[in-house]
Length: 413
Image (cartoon, rainbow, N blue to C red; front, top):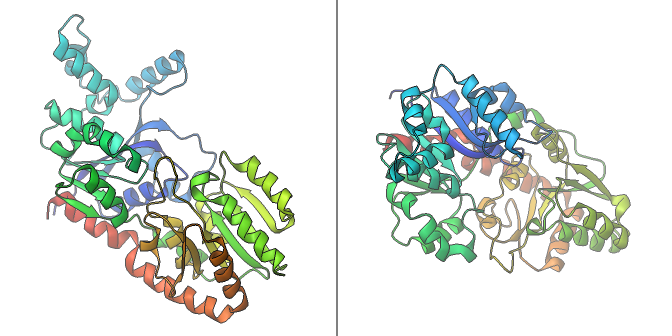
């Protein structure tokens, strides 16, 4: 098959919390496809993952200018965009759009190209793949207007774009998307069930989890375990992820006499100050390391040396939103770390309960503590679960395996 020219449409690139997008693109580059990334925002992250640098992904990226924080910023961004791409611009099209008083149809076209100026360039694509439904809406508009004709278009829903409380709203918002796109991916059956509530008869829906690039995990496999029993929480410090529950679990274990224990809190977010105050109130601050946002490689080092990974998330009461997959749970299993996770959203599809870890009812902190304590007291079980988890995720979640499915979608086979 001939290599494809693929355009990925994303919100922010590179993003330290959306490594799965960079991983997917890197896999397509490895397969010989020509990849371009159109991002609505440049990254404000201080951390950049090694994979992004190794593949030179920022050189593949066209960044929009409309979301700059000031008018001067927008003007500067616009100038830099046109300067950088001066030899690629379709000037005939650009000048036709600039003609004043040219009617309502031309105004609609101007709005469409303003949203996606990457299509002002003399570049042709075989595939346009949008990450998140709200980015797909903009491409669907171009298909509806006849600006895009031959391109096969796909969208990957990830969860924040399919909030259960907005199902009725999405029926209108995504109407053009459902009409004009060629395929849709969701990362778990849980997310598929929400999508089917929006459009019960939608065709060409593929369950495609996000995966990991094993070459970036393998160097950290089998690092020496910490001398201390170590729990790892890794995710944004936000209510949805349940970091407060991780602290409550730690406090209960300490109260039961588990004093040779530490909790690594990896991530940053709006709840950080409240969580630190909670730790002081519970008297467990000396058992916690607040590590903040880290590069993927540093996270892997901490994770590989840990004893147990915990995910103590919740379902939001007002929106019904919950974790749809949680790739970090599969990464932990790759490092032979048993996982103890809350049964929310699509999390249950990402482990084998009682084999590679334990699935706990969402609000049952007592059961959470019980299972972590069991693993603390039974290191042989930890080792057995860890070995099974490593084998299982290698079979299910490597980007090469998942990429085979994606490429088949792209080619329509």
